[in-house]
Length: 336
Ligand code: BDP
Image (tube, rainbow, N blue to C red; front, side, top):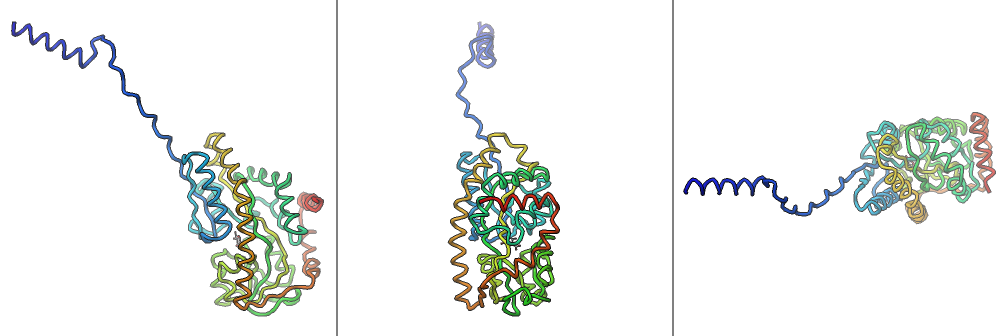
């Protein structure tokens, strides 16, 4: 009897444990695994409060919102990931996911970008925005695929002007012999040489100490950069010659973005474009604030009655462009 009982217990226990062909116990509903978060990095040369960085943050915010937090873009400002040229290289081979840069250093990777930043190319800011927001701008964004980038959007950078620590510049003759820092771009070196100055290419982050120690006499940039870098403290002569309008661009790494779903790629592209109006509005505000600050600081600001002499000096640069790029220039000028 005792033995019979233990056999029964054993049978019941094994039924309970292994089912014994009985109906499966209803499973507790499984929670769906949370989608894995994708964390991406965007490199920015400017400080956290500069208008391009504010645009980057808006881009990141939109991507985060539109993917319900699934894609997070961390903005590394203040050149934490390196200077522009080195960063572009890393984006090209996929070590950095995105960067916002000036198109000047980008030309070394995609030569056609020279045509978009020729001196005195645009009649004014409106003309530039018509070009960038139209078919030409779109072609340029697309053209980056060949160089392994995804062109995402344009940001404002106003106009660039010369400044230096030596003297007031009223005509190209006053630039003669001055050592002027330029971005790491052949076109910009040629531009400064065409004006009779000595071009000195160097990364943005090195310019302040080069000005301070006299390694260079001057540089060129827009109002907000002149102020944010404190160059105005060591190079007080600023001439409003507006020699270039060099658009800012945000690019992604093609190697990285190709691995995302088509839907996610579309979200990223749209978010970048949608961040443009915000950046442009922030830019306009900052341009005024920076100019005001330079005036208050006692910088000597030279307003040219005409920039015709500067324009004339740039003519050889247009002649040097390849026929393809001359054709792009012609199309840009036709945009009304
Ligand atoms: C600023 C651009 C920045 C460039 C810098 C420069 O916003 O991207 O790197 O000029 O001159 O206006 O290097």
